[in-house]
Length: 232
Image (cartoon, rainbow, N blue to C red):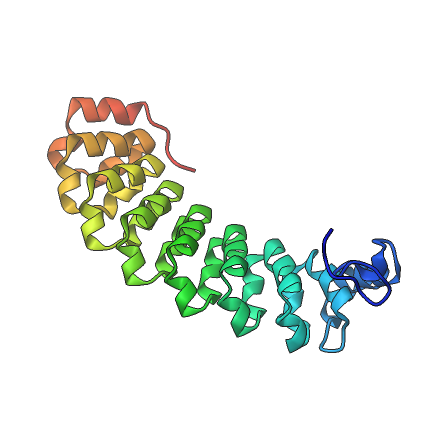
């Protein structure tokens, strides 16, 4: 729909214009029985079809195909880690990188330096996987919006946040709602904070071990812990 036509009149990226045509049959063989047969001589149409089944097959394709925006977009949509095989120019392409990190937040590690410092890319990465915060620049690990998104997805990401944000009450409580174990990474003062400890043990009673001795004996805290279920 709206794509450029190939020599036979088929839309670009649709081998032979028919999903069941010869190119698609060849791609089926390549992507299942002989996945490593994609090589620098494999045609663009076949690679396009193959990467929709296995994005990292992009790594076997020619440099020209690895610089093809539509092929790379298809690859990273299937597997964000295919970004590592894209051309340097496409690793610096905001839309390509966003597609990759929305599929797998860890794919941000393969993006260009400029994209790893891009806030929109950062937020998309940590929304998919909070742990991706570790791959971001110090400035983004100190960005409150980015860290809030990260700890909401995975409270353990608090361990990668800038020190100042590990003292931020809203950030800490959002992390604790994800996992009580985030209390371990918060500023030490939260271990003596009854509200914070209750939030933590409601998420996972085992977080009680991070509280001060006084709060480990606190009736309200103990009642919250008793009603909690341990994290899987």
